Amino acid sequence: MKPILMIDFGSTYTKVTAVDLEGARLLGTASSYTTVQTDINDGLNNALNLLSQKIGQLQYEKRYACSSAAGGLKMVSCGLVPELTAEAARQASLGAGAKVLRVYSYQLTEDDAEEIQQLAPDIFLLTGGTDGGNKENIIENAKILAGIPLDFPIVVAGNRTAARTCERILTEAGKQVHVCENVMPKFNQLNILPAQAVIREIFLDRIIKAKGLSQASQLISGIMMPTPAAVLAAMELLSRGTQKQSGLGQLIAVDVGGATTDIYSMSEGEPQRVNTVVKGLPEPYAKRTVEGDIGMRYSASGIAEAAGMANICRLSGLCEARAEELLSQITQHTDTLPETQELAQLDFALASLAVKTGLMRHAGFVEKAYTPCGETWVQTGKDLSAVDKVIITGGSLIHADRVEEIAACALYDAAEPSSLRPQQAEVLVDTQYILSAMGLLSQYEPDIALTIMKKELTSHGTAK
Image (cartoon, rainbow, N blue to C red):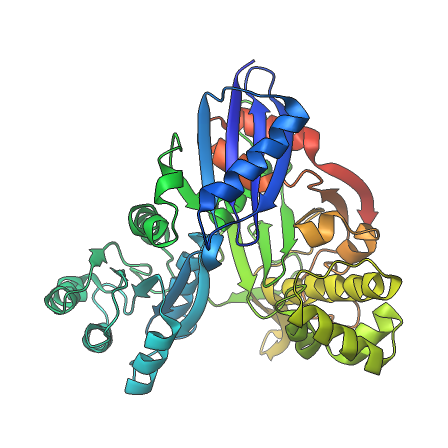
């Protein structure tokens, strides 16, 4: 046996996963409260003790880790045009595993500078202009950022003609600056991988220390990465496969947490209907979005605002007054478990609407248009209608009693005919909560990580 340990320092729980590389099998998992306010190693040791009770004491040959502790990797970005470089900056940030607090367009104002100071991001991504295009905007924005009295790293990934000027302005102001390739070197051409690589380097070099993970990182054999980036890596591996074994093809993953809802899609998203033209930036095959306003506890009120109390009442069977009373209770006491029938009904409604709202925002949509050649369709974003697998993960979903019904909310609904969500899909549940661990393992042993995921993801039938 060759045991390897994966650690996920979460905002609420620290999760540990042990695998045997020789047998390509899962040995066990355990979790304990993350003790980020005191010493993060306390929560890790508690989780390891629980794991040892299940599988015995093991000497791990390697330890790999990811983290979203203390709020994860918080980023702010800005670009020139909202639909172009600003959107490219947003995609670069999300793909790197960050939680995007704000995306600015055009020229930053003094009010924007004050807001950025209040947001206090871990990293700022400064973009704007294609190579050879507008350079005045990004230079002016660099001057605004230079005047903000906070010590956050700034990644410059805009017009290459202006990059060094921005670097000088920011360096002279005492900022830590990283210059990389433009996220949009040509009109409608995405180039987000270089910026993502730099963001992850900063995460390793600086953010780990800021989050109190320095001591824990000394126990780690390899890289530490943001948890969402690890899940994204697992999803892409599961979809594409390796040279030795095939993947599952197109898929969607849904992770509803206490504060946010993360959606991942592995698909080219090309139009599935005839006479369709695509509008906007090309979509990445591996795409992640995070909805910071919808979650099962901290952001439960956001679900109510997005979906409406009428829908919560319809799905839960609760009257509006009682539903509002319970909503207030769980947002004030975020550790509340669905131990009563009413709370279980409310959680079902919240989870269903979080999944629906998250997929509505993630998937593309179509609009009918009329041209001299006749009727046509205009598609914005990904067409996910042909995706045939939905992966369910996250504590609030994998332990749900009616997981198939919740997963069905990710699918096409005739009431929203413009939304390009899947028509039907097999529901696979991450019952052992191993996706972030497999994303970590994929960086070193992709075939073993893929084999374990295929074994452990449990099919719950087809949702229609």
